[in-house]
Image 1 (tube, helix red, strand yellow):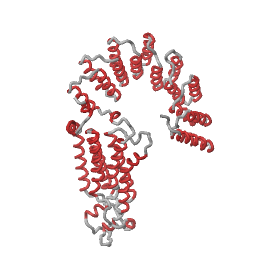
Image 2 (cartoon, helix red, strand yellow):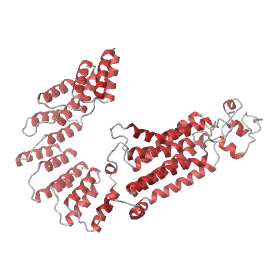
Image 3 (cartoon, rainbow, N blue to C red):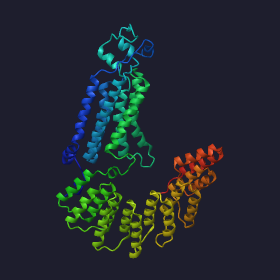
Image 4 (cartoon, rainbow, N blue to C red):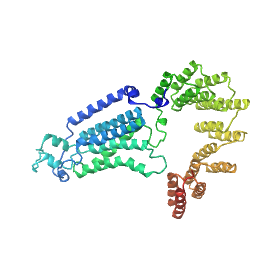
Length: 525
């Protein structure tokens, strides 16, 4: 069997499967088409238009710069051509199917929303006068409303100004394309290649120019194209995220956890004579637990047992942790008992997983008993044990107990607090506005040679700003910069505003220059 054949998913090999799996989605698309056709047939609300209102509705009635028939071509067909090019290169029918399905959903949902709002609003177009009175002679009824003499279809379109359909469709289709490209070319990989952003913004530029043309042609008011474009872009974003991971997620499909694909690859391997081993099952069980698909993880565990494959301690720990997080404590304990019966020597990660399971169910006394068992078997506890129990105590509001545990266990050999432990305690005291205690813990950490990270600095500095202790806030901010840690923009913004409120513009300038100097310093490696 060709190994590459397992990784490629073509139209021929998987097209029918993926289409059948998404059959209901395609049926919904047909429903959206029918809805949009119906919305274009029914007349809009004929809003009252008086003579005074016509002053702003006498712009020339001219042809469209961008014809209506061209919108589906550049907003839908052109992006689909690009999707097909990516398919030819990658041979990934899932990507092709999802991109086509996504963009069709984007434009059709946008179309239904746009036409619904058009019909309900009935806002006259800027060229309404010449639609209503092609001969230039205006007439009104007894209430002062217009009595149009123009062609029915032209008048009907004259009441469909808000929002702009050209704009909404353009931003829906091209906005989806922009998101798709940003994900495919990894525009947000942090390497600073501006050319990638140029490619991402190109579809949005085209959509913007189309929207501007609607105002230039006097078919829409500026509010129409603004709201239309915003509507299309929002719908495109929702539809993209329904089928793809966010474009800033570099792992792409991996973090999207396409489990349909995972199952198919797994079945293909078995069909082609590749019997999954314990490593394969471990990867699959771990993936399902990370995505909280615990029943699927259990199903694979039972398949592994049926194949007489002995689980590893890591698999047991993963399942104990997963069952605990899902508050299925009895099942978590069952796996721990299976782990002990399997003949494995006591291991710290498995005990930590069991202790965490008790913590998720707020059975802290049982969690403490697990820690005693760790000591009994000589396998712990360690700093990870401390982090787990501190997290759950603080989450339950038992902060005094958390600090007591920190002091007691932190002095135990092998259980020395790590930077994450100190961060948990510092954040706890900051949230309680006990900044003096937070600083005391901070100093203990520094005395042990442990360096704080960006999040820990941010927590302390923001708390000092909220307390009004700007001198110490600036001191820790400078310390962070001196360590080469680039401050988040929001952190500096908060500190800057607090300093400006106190009239300390000179300090803001000094800190700003120091921050800018650090930002211009190339990252090592």
